[in-house]
Length: 351
Image (cartoon, rainbow, N blue to C red):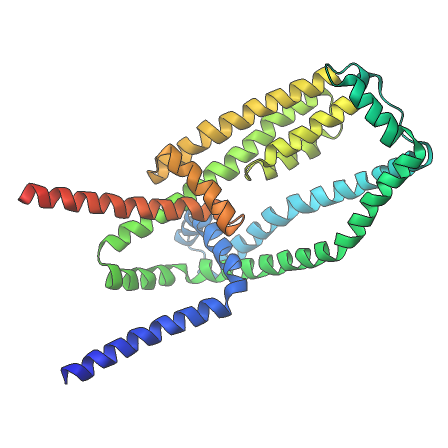
């Protein structure tokens, strides 16, 4: 009888593991959407609870918050896309003029220290000569055509991920309390009472990371936006919006204020372009190395170094959603480590 029970238990465990692995394999392409739904749900869960406590039915709250999240995600990118399309007309005309007559070497290029003569010669050879400029731009155009189909397929994949993210977010808002209760019971059954604290630490880490990345990124966009206006940069609001959106991604803000700096330098505003670049480096350095680690580390009880490792490691492993999953994983590991240390200390004291 005992051998039969042991065999049934082993068979049951094997069935559970096989089913879980099969489910992961089957849903592999949808896991990023579910992860994004979980991250967004955790970040906005307090608002959901506040609305439900106010008397609104869960399904209405779920529909309202899902619509708000969809607008918050799509509207900024739609505005950026419209502005880029408008500027694209000017860019196309500039490229046509460049192909027809070349681009004369600006006076400031020759005045650059150390590399001025070399830069002016390169400019005259590859951009000043109409034939060389036409050949260079022809190569760039051919590369764009070759990758256009791939870009379209990637865009379709992103739209599909967004759709399933919003769908999963709706059900998470609507049925979240039941999902949390059932998950807690299963976790406690498998891991014991510490599972509650591990889950709490992971949730706090995700919420703190959202606040540290998104809110600080928006603050970077506002601060640099004032700098763009003061420097006389064309379309400062567009550049500020792009900075705020991409500042949540490591090295995203430097890309935008670097382009802004080059734009000013190309317009012969060398001093303003240089100052924008230096000021942007200072803002990004302070935000990435001081403000964000403090916000995330204090809320999630993660040391400074592990915050950075969690952010960059998560980004490298899981993509953009790894920015939020990485610190959560690190927080769980640190909680397990602290429990092991505490248990060992208690055993030593007992001896």
